[in-house]
Length: 381
Ligand SMILES: *[C@@H]1O[C@H](CO)[C@@H](O)[C@H](O)[C@H]1NC(C)=O
Ligand SMILES: *[C@@H]1O[C@H](CO)[C@@H](O)[C@H](O)[C@H]1NC(C)=O
Ligand SMILES: [Ca+2]
Ligand SMILES: [Ca+2]
Image (cartoon, rainbow, N blue to C red; front, side, top):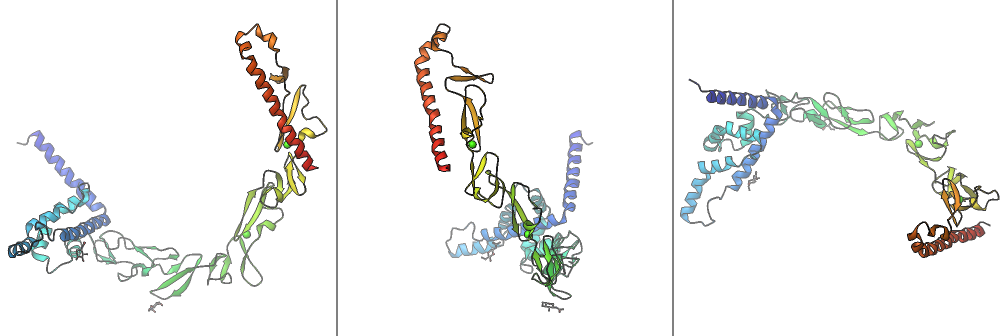
């Protein structure tokens, strides 16, 4: 009678076999790749084990032992053990499943069939096909097995028992046999078995040759002139300009670009402050360049509140409280007298000397930009 444990074991191994068969059948292209990798590694391991177990001496005994080792089971086992990464399920599974085939080849077929890949992967376990062939029966790829896809593409499943033999054409080619050219390419050479597609001139949508005179139709951004050539459209000379108000336009072959003007310009013809057509707010034209307006020197008072001072800055200005005043709820109020605070806050009087000197310093600093502005004004004049 079967115990529960045995039943379970049976079930598990059955489902494992079904599961692995499923994976095995699922991707025939992968099976061939795995097989190729195994036979490649076999070759490497074969070379690596050539002189194994012998220290490099060459006594007669060693010579005899060596020749015996070369074809020994010990060497085969050594090779088989190193064919797969331990993590590769597909590889280990394939080697285990076909261990008998490796033994057959090693002892009986090696001389007659030296190409292990051909003997094992193509002819014995049937996971690969000869180059240029595909599918379960190794049929010839589209365009023939000699030159699949006429050399202009890749045959699906090429060299494996998978795939459908259809072509994925290289860039520039199309059609079942990769003999036709896609739009933007033209046939430089073509017969029943050979095709060379080259790229059209950048100005052509379709063409018959390589220059801008050979276009059937111009690409967008290009237009045909009187001589039948496709020439670039200068979009920047269009009226209105294709760019926004504060951008300048650069024409390019087949297109154009728009770039934002320098910040001192509101409209411009190019990059930089000397290419303005008109100045941005806060700037004025000074001998062909847009420079900052000193709002503080203007006749109309720009800081209308009481006890305010005007401070000019590049592109604008600011209104701050005059020295001796501080901002409180949007108005400038006088800094409290030292004496008035002394009685209220005792630590304040202790800090006072520092505060006063700091205040003087602030006053000095405020005067500096003024002189700068002044000299700046001289330059303007
Ligand atoms: C094994 O060695 C031979 C001769 O040195 C060399 O031609 C061959 O490419 C090697 N094979 C592999 C898989 O490294
Ligand atoms: C087709 O053209 C190629 C390249 O010019 C040439 O090698 C080949 O012989 C030609 N084949 C036929 C059938 O004309
Ligand atoms: Ca253009
Ligand atoms: Ca300013």
